[in-house]
Image (cartoon, rainbow, N blue to C red; front, side, top):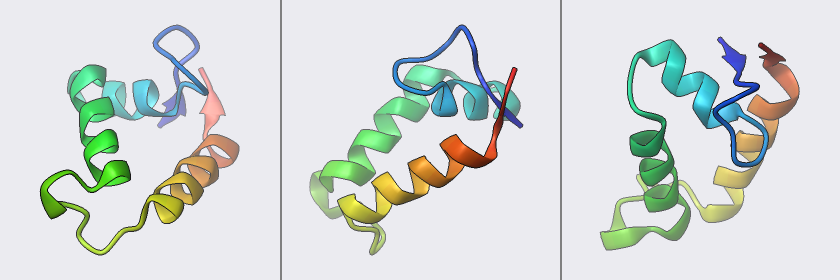
Length: 65
């Protein structure tokens, strides 16, 4: 799993994860926003701050493709 160099908005993390899972990066970005904003209470106990920390951990640990 690597960050995407072409399918990125910020760091390429979600584009790279989506490519590895074989799903749409738009779908994964939508799910990220649901978790970040807690739309409809669908956060599964993950706060928006924790969501950002998780994203940053992936950003610094995943290599760039």
